[in-house]
Image 1 (tube, rainbow, N blue to C red):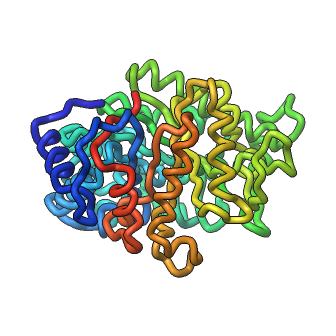
Image 2 (cartoon, one colour; image 1 turned 90 degrees about the horizontal axis):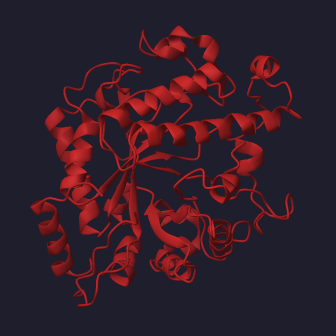
Length: 407
């Protein structure tokens, strides 16, 4: 973990003395063993931060500091901060423009350096800062002319595939794979981030009635593969393997983690898969062989998004956590579980998510499996709102004292 200041110790001590968010006193016992207690901070579409584009630098800094303090108050120890939400940057990058989510205009200098500040302020509080990158998403629309004039996608439209109302870089082009790595590694080179974090977007999620048009790239680069699906998986495998090696060379000690959709394959598709009936399978639909990355220890940690309740028929939390624990067993790859805090208290999510104890039961179940080394919550806005009191219940039941993140 990064340097820890006097302020970090003070904040942690205050959080402990204050007891649980429900006002009960924290028991006096040994610190918990090292475990991941993470919180995603999404910047795409201003989901979590900043609250809207165009705030002053002082206002943006204050909001960011408030989210880091929120993590400390809930006795979390890591923040997954989205710094490249859409082929853009939250730091001065020589490769890509400033993010429009900061100022409202892509390419406009916000007047400060959010990533540099986030790393420093997180470390001052005793928090890890995992730099969260989206490798291939270019825009949440399909109009190249809306991108900054110097945007690489605008200069190289042959790199771009429109699909599902969005723009994506084509993962099948070797020059694209090299470029996105260069763009992400610029941040790793400049700032002492604790980890590089990918989310679940590799090839995009399927959209009914639409085709991801990469035929030309397949014709040029797909020779020797049994079909397009195998070639696409190889493209994603290469991204992961190459990125892992380059992170180690660029900043030794910085970890590499991925947070995929939680269903690798259903058992009906593959006997090695989970006893689930999910409509999306990462291996087949996103062309991400996440099980292989864990089994062969290509990555330092995996954080599957197990975003369903205990008892959910198609993808039961109580089925997927043991399945991932068995996948991770003996590999050296850390297993953390992504938790759907955003569902808690939302009437549209069903009865299970109205129970403030649902998430607490997740942690109790996961602790039966020693391979599970922690949890990450989606996302910061929901930690702050805590609509059903689910996060407060987690802290009261499981986070009575601060804990170190695993190293």
